[in-house]
Amino acid sequence: MTKKSDTKPTKSISKKQPKHPLVQKIDVLLKKQGKKFSSAVRDFHGHCVDKKIHDAEEGTKDEKSWLSNFKKYRSRISEKSQDCPYRMLQELLHYLEGNIPIAPQPLLNLVENDPICEAMKKASKKIYQEIQDSDDENF
Image (tube, rainbow, N blue to C red; front, side, top):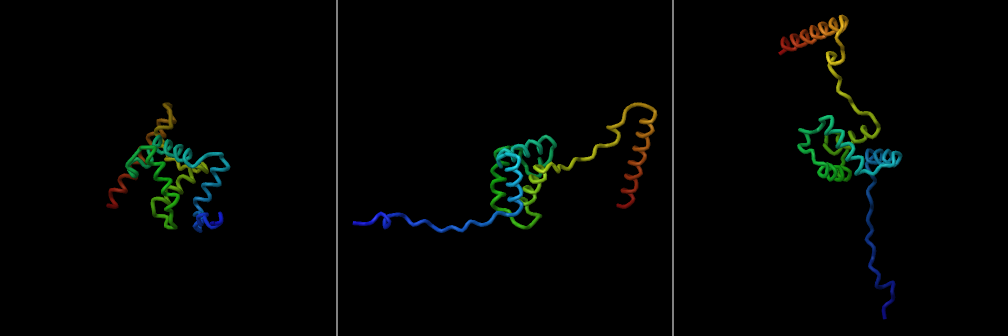
């Protein structure tokens, strides 16, 4: 007869690698906000599509592929800040922190039609033209 302890399969000893510090920061923020990783990626995807960020760079607007890519990024992240997984996870972290870079709007869109605003428009156009002229001279 064999004993029960003899028939038990042996558990493989696997050493779990520690998480990357960036992934740890994201996990802490998600826990504080009460969100799951997948819902945060979906929110970030929606933000990027709305603001037209990463459309051409990533080549896709599909939410499912973004989610699968970000899950891969979590496991394949390296210390190189130029790598796509690191960059995208860093942008997700900034999004979760609320540090979202906003593109500056042109001055002409912010002014109304009154004499002072008309002067501002003219000055803005003049400054813009001077910048364009100086850029042309440098090339």
